[in-house]
Length: 280
Ligand code: PAF
Image 1 (cartoon, rainbow, N blue to C red):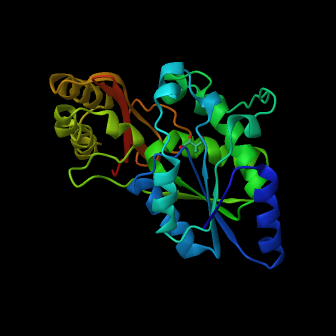
Image 2: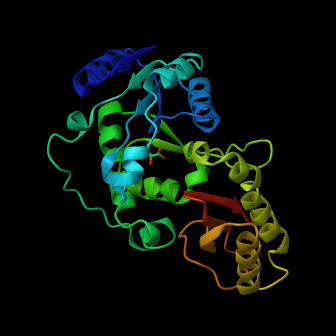
């Protein structure tokens, strides 16, 4: 496994292998890797002749400077973990390398970016789209792997690829969970011991929504979910039942519209998100 910090070195290494006809899988990350990331990387290693992983804490997708400052940067540990997965290339650029001048691109994802995370974190998805487009231009992968944990991000990337006609196959990967059901996330490390022991309640709430789907009204299901979380010590940002494709919030159950349940809430200072497919 080799690590490059510059775009030129990365392009050159990839070009040689591409010319030899090798297929490239890509996993973009912001580092602080956990099992969820490593699962994406292992899938890429299993399905492609080469795997590249980017590690870049993208400043333009953070709305809160504190969040950006606090984001864990653990490159050496990440490299050690990646080395064990069969990853071939790590691209770990500096901010100056990625943004020699401020990014100006503005994407319009319509409704997709106006709901849930888009409403709570203005500008976040534009920042994600700008960096992922740049990374795709540099890495030129055949396939790129994204976790369903960040489902709205996955839909934004799928839309970006369609809009910009980027020749890459996006592979969605189911969420990896801790044994108690908590979705793996780099933010989990900020939970106190006490918070960690109750954080799995989010998954229990999602499972309860799934059990009640089609049986009681969406309004009631959402009300029950908020009340259960708030009783458990969480502060709810949103609970939504939305179309899995358009992310349009649904007001009634409809077997013809594949749906997902989405949660965002705070446990202490940590904002956690999760989502689950609804089966009617
Ligand atoms: O999901 C993430 O870690 C980031 O949003 C991504 C896709 C690496 C872009 O910075």
